[in-house]
Length: 134
Image 1 (cartoon, rainbow, N blue to C red):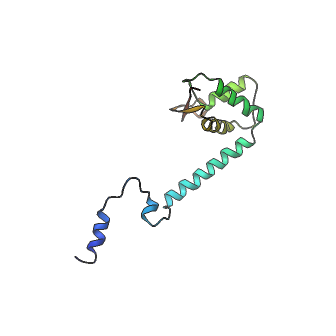
Image 2: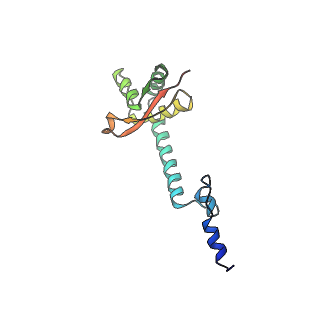
Image 3: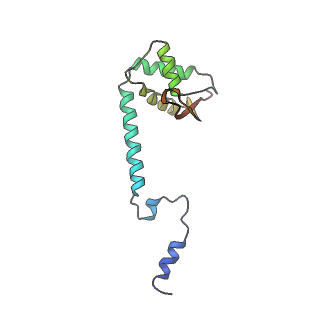
């Protein structure tokens, strides 16, 4: 056996699917893993910031609309925002609906039901939510 033959054998061994890239190179995150982690943290911070600056009455009313939705019904965040607008309840930034949706998911009120085309975003794919049975 040559000194390089062992290295070739090591390269041929399959890596289990449960092992991430950082486990292979000694625990250091790959550039892609670092980018995803930083991006995720930035998005979470932005959602939290917008949610903190939302009108508390608007926030409570949005949660009430989600609670009043019948079990099994599906909806999108933009539907909640439009129902609030019809009732005359507004906030400075409608992106605060993201924080309300995340809170409702953590409370177990809703679950993901796939994606649908959003009217407010030129038909882009957005998450559809389903009201959980309580």
